[in-house]
Amino acid sequence: MKLVIVALALVAIAAAAPQNKPEPPKILRSEFEQQPEGAYQFSFETEDGIQRQENGELKQVLDEENKPQTVVVVRGSYTYTDTEGKPQTVTYFADETGYHAEGDSIPKPARR
Image (cartoon, rainbow, N blue to C red; front, side, top):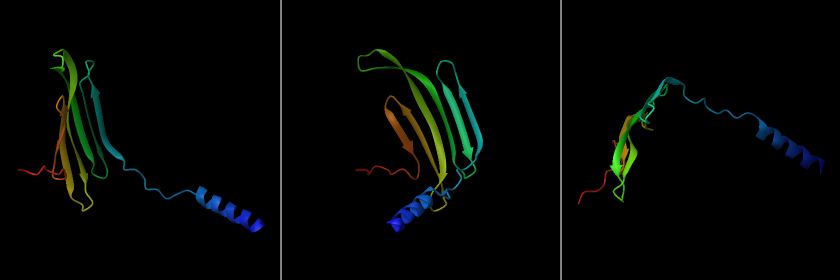
């Protein structure tokens, strides 16, 4: 019985030991600006090569009942290094029609 308790105690100690987790990448640059009416822009870059930039602008659209609505139109891009060491960039925009992304890593729909 004492052997089981000692074994469980050793397992608990081992589980509580600090794990060697890698440090998250450091942020080299970060910018953010927000306008009072709701428009914004931001960008950042990390030491491992990740980059992102985005801006949002307000736009008036008509809803399904033809009533005016204000939406935020978002445009941006991000860059990362894939598992083969190649930089990948994705550009995107999102508006009342949905989210649209383009880049070499984004699958293309089959043409008919």
